[in-house]
Length: 340
Image 1 (cartoon, rainbow, N blue to C red):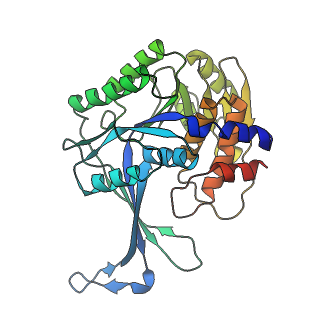
Image 2 (cartoon, rainbow, N blue to C red; image 1 turned 45 degrees about the vertical axis):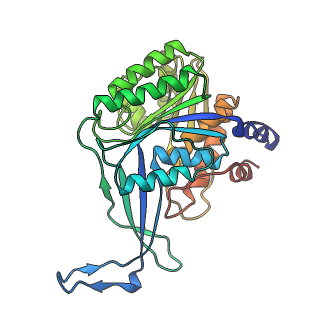
């Protein structure tokens, strides 16, 4: 792909309207200064003094952050937060993102706000050191009334032609405790029938088994699990499995391969493998997969071929892994620089 072709694709990003349906969480970073360490008089334990707190949307919110960085014109988060302090922070962070509309983002007292609290030890001339994370999650099933509200939002966004693409992001550990529940997936399955040309790309940290026939994005281990094959597949075996899955669903399949790059398979049997770009220093892989999801969706929605979408997403992932101590994102200018 040359620079002119990438610019032609990226020039369409400001006209795109994309809905992100999934588990939005608050990423809260606590920056610790070890030089200000103390010992608690009461407990005798070490005290970590926090000198700065910063927050941003995480999980599905990381995908949204990447869409904002790409300059997408209109972004519709479909999800929920609790009526708590973390929910206030999350909504405030979302509202600060250009192009983000919260018409379908629900505040509810039936759920707590999904939160990742990340303590970071900050020392001069060193990469941030992340300590044990403190998570706040929902462990009970999402109330059906809330599920119905989310489904209604999804149907309205699709039915009224308000969006060019949907991204589905399942981040929770326990099935049916987040946004992407069995009930919502059945509604998406019906949407695929009613709107066969609507671009829908899905990712799940647990499993995509039994999901509707949409574009699927996963890593090699998840592909092995989904296709019930042995772990540690060779590249040729990954190619074969991805094509089988793409043909089964009549939709593209994308597989992230860590240091081996990204592979895209089409229902027509084509396979596009793009090797990863060279490492340019210390790396942090957090957020790379979400950057891939956002860039694949934007590129495809803007008219890119499967191969072009993989090239762009691969470059975006390379940008993100070189951003330390944060869940990074990639702008068109940064992607263009690598592609050039």
